[in-house]
Length: 328
Image (cartoon, rainbow, N blue to C red; front, side):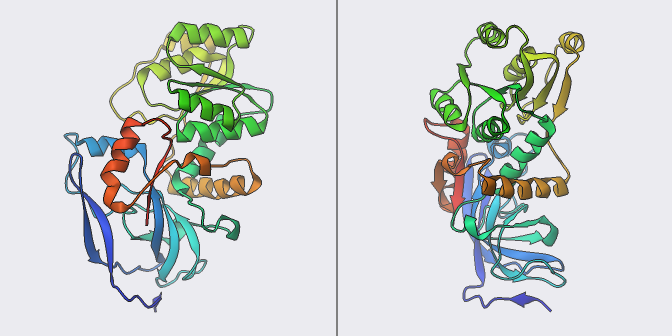
């Protein structure tokens, strides 16, 4: 038998993207969790840059989206549980890997949830991108004493700077935005470099490393030039980690240079949901331990009715922007 709370209003609100750059909020019946599922009354959902491709309305995109669709960074409180759920109950606060989280409520499988401890009460916790940062960090294999370049200082890049610096690495942060470079210093970067001239950046990093370049380079932009730059900054037998989301077409690489330097190349994007969940668990632990502090980076907050504004600002990145949240 389902265990459910008493709900006075049996409806929910959800955003539907009706066309390129167009959103409407609809009122719908509350969904009922199935076997091994829970329903979450969402407190919020992070706005992911991966939404920007569908938001622009490419040929492959179909409109309207499913209600709440595109939202996958939700957290909140369980208000109903389905048959067979063992490890969660009504009232538990959780981060979830669910896929219709631009809404007041969403359904999630029990194995796609992570408990949020009491010390995080009242704090926003978009679990999926935090777990993503942890998984990238794990695959980067950053060690104490290494020189690590991080190209692109947005939300993800800033988290990786924090993690690498606390591991004992010397972090070189490279970004085009002055605000981002200031944030990089606050996150623990030892050196910041403006991303303006390819060869000038290489010369500066060579000077900082006595010509050896970097043991680890993380590309966190998702464009051709930062990928080229990342490869050129990776030292012999170093590791290039692709963390940027390359969603706008094919890329070219200088395989001759990659071969000559003998570098390892890691595509740090995961597709196994279980690995994402483990990353979210590690993110909770990292925040508790003080190794990661995402909260100052959650710079912009919007109601569901302003999802279009949140997506546009995620695209345009006004001064001071790092990460947008939809809050309920």
